[in-house]
Length: 362
Image 1 (cartoon, helix red, strand yellow):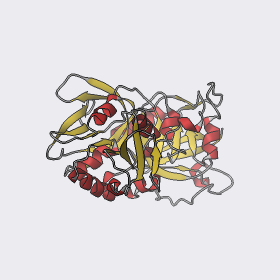
Image 2 (tube, helix red, strand yellow):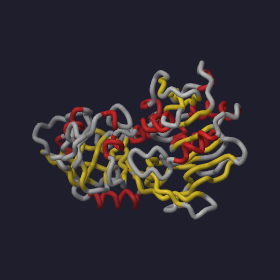
Image 3 (cartoon, rainbow, N blue to C red):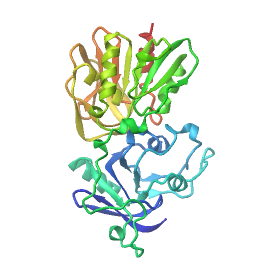
Image 4 (cartoon, rainbow, N blue to C red):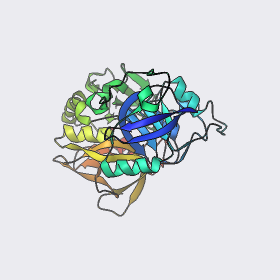
């Protein structure tokens, strides 16, 4: 590691840190994640597209980076990374490279900022906000006077939520996973790889389609549809919402996951809103409505369902802030959860959600 650089927030706050990633200026939305493990899965989760990720757990990098078959997508998805302490000498039998080597190879900047506790408290109090990692001379006193990356104006804080992030991370052509006799479509809004694996493990053939592709146009006969997780504002995925409306009219079984929960709600006439600082980590408690049953879940989202659509009822709610964590139709096989039943990383308490979906397939 070398060179002291700055993380600048839009409100003027600055956090000085040492670089251990790519020397590149970037802008994004600064968010925090509370998980203690699973940084390779988190960094490759497409739901983090456009965001500068702050890990609250103080030690990151200690078990290196595993082979890409353990990643949740084909590359690092975050715009930048902030940690308190980076371990440059990992020890794990599956490690193929250090976190620093991986970040530099993929062109992602990262800073070791000692006061991640103060940074997280600020984001919890004021809400997530735009920020940038600045490698300009003015940004950190570099003698070169060169910006190693894009050129920044003082007021240039890009808001990734104004972009169609779902379109950026979705596949371009349909793909098939598994070889079961029953076929389901997975609408890829930024799907984590373990969603398809979890479905295939249950004997299903999974046809993964782009975010704006209507599964009804597939040549294969499908028995159900899964709407995946993904980044950003669900309102930006209008084509997906329209396609889900068409699927609902056909009364096909539908399971929404994370962003899929919000998309299903919008398609049915519900509303969504942006959370103050979101839910990100592997320790979010969700209560099954009407019971005392609570499951620990993996989550990664900045938006949530507001108004529950007509014909649906609340399925889960968050034990921390009482926000919606899932909806289920009173009569039809339509269900969705705000958390990640596929985990990766995190607890597998909610893995049974996939079994509930499979029961509805004809």
